Amino acid sequence: MSLSSAIHSARSGLQVTSLRAGVVATNVANASTPGYVRRSVLLSENIVAGGTSGIRTDGIARSQNEAITAERRNLTSDLAQADVLSSTWRTISSRVGDTADGDGLFKTFANFESALSNLALTPESGADAAVVLNSANAIVQEFHGLSQLAVSLRTEADREIAQGRDIVNSALKTIEQLNGRISGMDRTTGEAAALIDERGRVLDTISEYLPVKAVPRDYGMIDVVTPEGVFLLAGTARQLEFDASSAFGPDQTIGNGALSGLSVDGIPLTPGSSSYGAVSSGLFGALFTLRDQDLPTFSTQLDTLAGDLITRLSDDAIDPTKTPGDPGLFVDPAGSGAPGLAARISINAAVDPAQGGATWRLRDGLGAIAQGPTGDSTILNAMLGSVKSVNSVNANGIQGAFSSTEMVAQFATLAGQKRVQNETVLSSISTQHTMLRDAEQAENGVDIDVQMQELILIEQAYAANARVIEIAGQMINRLMEI
Image (tube, rainbow, N blue to C red; front, side, top):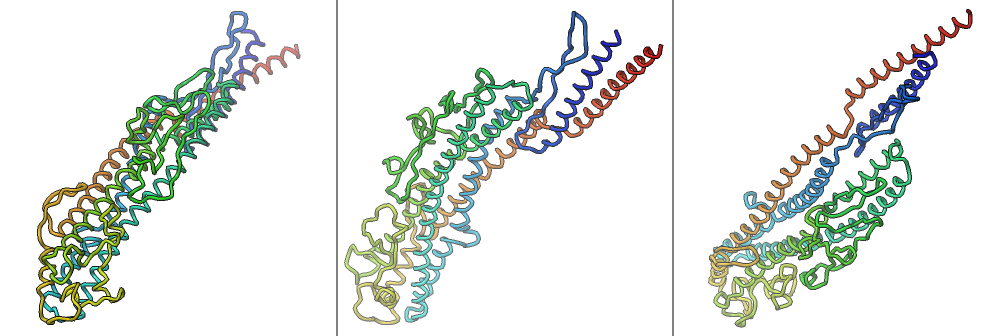
């Protein structure tokens, strides 16, 4: 090797080691940056006139395993769906109450039954009559509160769908812009690697709302498509369409067109729809499931409980003083029994002093004009018997033979089962997601120890090339002296 060749080779070596050191430093600095993919320098021999003349850099490589990343994104969608469903049913189950602890609606029914039993033993007691009225009012308020909870959760789900629409549309537009920038530059540069990382983070954001796949295209660009084959970005970004709603009563459903679905270019994406493009998971999957399935079912079950309570205590055999067919202690102000009954149920004005009634009518009958014998507990015992009687029911997911309080316990059990079911799914998916995320990190991420070892090798290579130049300089100086 000539002296000039040695100098040239050493100089190229110094340049490469400097670049390698910069890449290692970038890796270490971004070891904890979400979505960062480890970089490395691509090297090859520099051939001049058929001979080796140092080394050259062919660009910056990203050490990404696309298959693992794609699978992790799918699990990200599943995890987002499971997390929302689990947290929502945890809230509902906690609000409904646990029969073991006697909280919530179960407690109010149990208290009402106990108060009614006490009054039947002491029908002359005005204090006990007031306790019965208060416990009945507690049932009414609990029905109203749970009904409002369902409406609030549906409203929140609809609002979050609208927010998700905007986030996904913005993300798709960002990917379109990043595609344009990446396609117009050398994709082996560090700048291109940073843009590709940023595009991956945007894809991660989209995958939280619905599962998507990245389809490679020419010049480093990608298209974005759902697993069902609906393109969200094909050269240009398409826009998700969804109209937020303002009312969420029992008459507002997606089936009758009162609530909006999700679509793109006229293709329905609404989870649960018959469309081939229906979204299968992600936040959209969870939010539509809650808004259009779980929460409406919860509301109809509440209506079933309220209707059963009204029917039990409206039996004409209980109270001979009331007009046949008229309601008993609990009434539906609309008088129709239509959906939304749990939100309307109230106390019969005849027994409520706040509405001009009197508590003694609990004992003497709703249609009584004057007080009767204070020791007569006939009507009270009939009311208690009706509450305790076991009736068959098969409606809205509540099936079996129950007393009034047992039916509420069954309702609480159903809510608890939904909570446990969704928590089990969340636990399973979370474990899978963690394992795949760790595998992705091992493939794509930065191992600080490995990078430090790489830095030692770079330092040694730098020292060796610097020594070559130093010796070459000494030789040149020696030749100049000769």
